[in-house]
Length: 132
Length: 91
Image 1 (cartoon, chains in turn purple, red):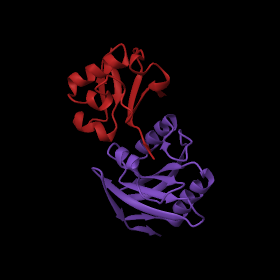
Image 2 (cartoon, one colour):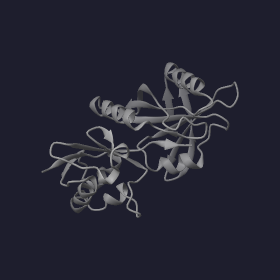
Image 3 (cartoon, rainbow over the protein chains, first blue to last red):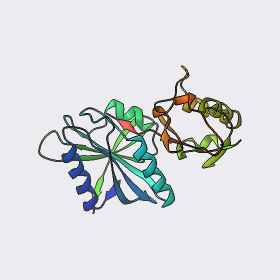
Image 4 (cartoon, chains in turn orange, yellow):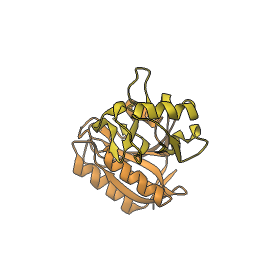
């Protein structure tokens, strides 16, 4: 289960709407599994079909987490024309990341769709998203 | 000359859990070869079979992404710092 304060989720949804029709991406940091803060990342691809963290910005964020004893808890991104379900590309890249949770937002229509997943060795398992 | 190389969590299985290790080399390629001689297998996570920098990692020399410098030919000099991070992407 992923538990997020309403304010953080609202920030993610607002980011996704703002960057639409391009995909947005970002990090929710955590400590001992509890979400602490949101980092909105620049999508270096500026694309409606993919995202890549801006490498310079990612270095700064990773370092900030390390110094604060926080962890990269959640990677979030949006799908702008399809459902909030991990794509094959997401599954491929998940094997390489340190994030425990993949949060996906779909902005394909006016209703926000947001879902959370744990992806282990290519296996996608949806988990409950609890908004506090 | 010894260069400090910062290793992300996901690759610390190769460094016995160490966050930072020392390596030597005049170029990034040389540095990674030296790193692999001390931490066997790590090269395969950084460089592809074709000999290119892996797209799944970002390598920075003094906080500059080496993709914008000289990739594996990036010169390394005394006092430089090298950081490896997992690249983050998806579709």
